[in-house]
Image 1 (cartoon, protein in one colour):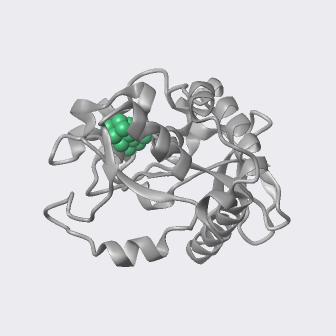
Image 2 (image 1 turned 90 degrees about the horizontal axis):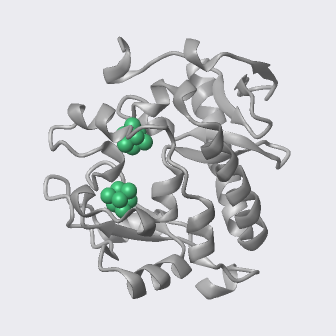
Length: 232
Ligand code: SF4
Ligand code: SF4
């Protein structure tokens, strides 16, 4: 199957970006984390820590509007070059890997969808319901937001849910892919005997048992903090 065939309904990329534009927090959270990154970049904008992904339609749109992005090559992080073949194999067919020029050149209107969703992904239950936002646990020790989930604005949460409700209608593979990521998260947290924080689509915040998937209402300000942020 060709890549474009994976999209059952065409994607209007500009409309997608305009409706998914709210910042995660009401201030620049990059100021909180970049002081802990030796290169001074926010972790999610540092190609040595996170490689952005985009739908092929996004790439078509972005390359026609800006020179901010290029097709990821694997040599962008000199300290840790990656074999492109390995990572390309691990990347789902409906996504492609990109690299931007770096945070000093960022153009907010041309941020990719992966920049907008970070540090979250849509959590899908084992009975295939998209119930809200879960975080990318690999970034627990580096992303300030993950240690401060109470700082995530309701406006961001609402835009996130609306965006993925829409994308899941257009890109069935995307739903499958996040169902898989959610399952992986359940296994990981079950192994650690920890509950999964969920920013629920109903506006509340919960802790989810990875075994039973029972939800318990919770206060995010009391959630555990990680890495650099255990004390602040
Ligand atoms: S989302 Fe996390 S990693 Fe990205 S700038 Fe904000 S605190 Fe830093
Ligand atoms: S486009 Fe902007 S937000 Fe996205 S990774 Fe690059 S610097 Fe960060």
